[in-house]
Image 1 (tube, rainbow, N blue to C red):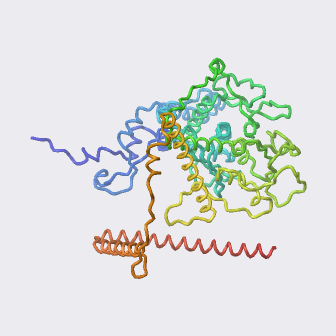
Image 2: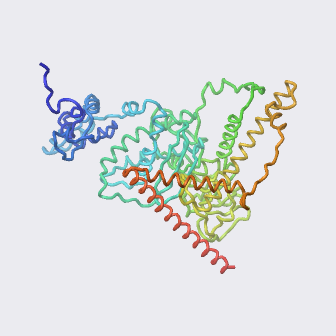
Image 3: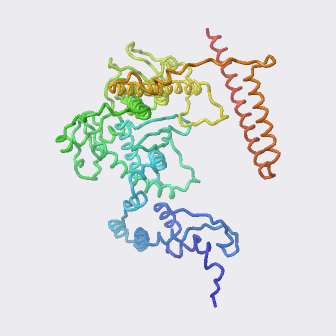
Length: 575
């Protein structure tokens, strides 16, 4: 006789465990369990049928996969959590007995753990870590600007600031920045690192307040993991570019702890005659980084690799090569330009963006460390100001507003300076991250930019075709042919213009097009009539959303039209 299976002993009921069951199984408190799940990347799951899982009840519960909990049960970090809980009990017992000296001495034997193995486990390859870098960078840059208080210790803020400065120095040195956008939330950046696109946001440098509704313990757990992850990534990125890590300033004496592997030097050591510390110079982002000279770099000279010019180059390869040339030109957008920043502009954001494209930046030495040249330098080409007038002007340089720098990066070429002069009304700052879909409102400036990009793309395609054709001609010339066979056949064809036939005063082509449109409209009407009730309801919802979208686009167009008319009236009144 076959043994009957009881309800809840097989199937989906055995796939999940509730949170209370997990806490009993792992013998952990709820805060420690949350912390462990964040570090290991374990998240709750919603069952398809709660009644089967919860014995017929639909009460709200948090469920986890059984296989995930079995995975957590063998985690070495569990023992560290239990040891720390026992350590806290011993310290409290000593304090209750009045043995404060003994309690303070116990902190020397405080359990310590690292997240190195967890980082390696969650990201087996370096590319996996780069792909998951967006949230980590946004969180690290946020905590680097927060004030320290009893819930947020100073060493956490300083560590986040150190990691963010190291990452920005790498992006500037490798020229990996691709896009940037100024918004109310902060400044969005996008960089291309190891072939992967990384996007993050940096908050504005204003006074930050932490709302009481935010659970800071959960965020600190994320920061603990993200800090370990970004530390590994920074080390790998610096090593790939032959840069010293921890980073050092080129041309300055080495720090005492700089030669010790993985040892972060004391940031307060003064290394310049002006009394500037190492951390201050790194955070200024205006200095070049020191490189590591390896033996293979000295012994292995560059050898010219012979190129077989007889190999046929098709259009795809020619276009790819031109795209690479455009990218290399884009990386040198500000090369040869020297900028000077006034005290009222966002110094860190401008320094980071300008240095990422080969420009030189400086400011007045009284505003902060890292200044490389004075305001009176005759080689300065652009002076960035954010005030309507300047008391003293140099005729050898151009005065611009900060938006010019960001717009040049987004449009990938140097823009005219007339629209960005001090005191003038700035053009709209368009976001390069927006991908317009069919029916969306597109500003006139964006349409003009798209038209210009389309023309440039057509030129690139035409040039690549010409290169491919010239290579084919050269190859056939070597074989004794005057022209390629395909080209000859095309040229030999005689084109005969087709006449236009009019029927009843209406051209035949227009009549055919009108008939075709009527036929398509009739087919669409019949298809709608044959729809089921469910599909008809879905179709009506789609059409309703399209009409709503078209209404919003029309309102935006009317608003823009009224704005342009008002601006023209103001300009005519001024004239």
